[in-house]
Image (spheres, rainbow, N blue to C red):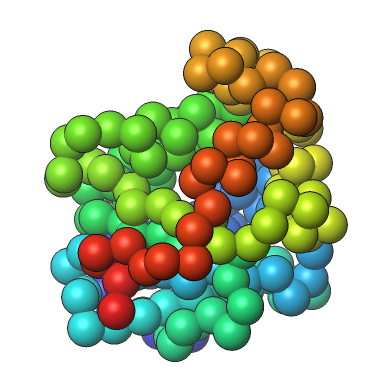
Length: 165
């Protein structure tokens, strides 16, 4: 598929060709979707969907998303430049979700329930990502599955963020 700009192409390439991203997404079930917005393309809605061949970026809103993301071009560039294993990439993504820098901030909303996230493979992804992700969670007070469940419960909302339509 051809994408309308370099940032969208980079996101698609990360999921399709970067060995760390491709391997990490192996934990996610086929059919799982997330809605994706891009700050520099405010009139467009995209979605990531896990297919048999891997994760694909497609135009349009996800039918039943687990998450909603909003990426800036700078955040995409920073994620693409992150080198290391799944734990390094995971921590980089979490840092971008938590940053106050509007140029780097990744908007993030949890839509699915904790148990849906577990069934879809997201908990397995977090646990198998490596020690840096687990240490990152511990630094933020998340050590047990119960604490992660409570954290997801706090972040989960069906109310759209201001950058969503």
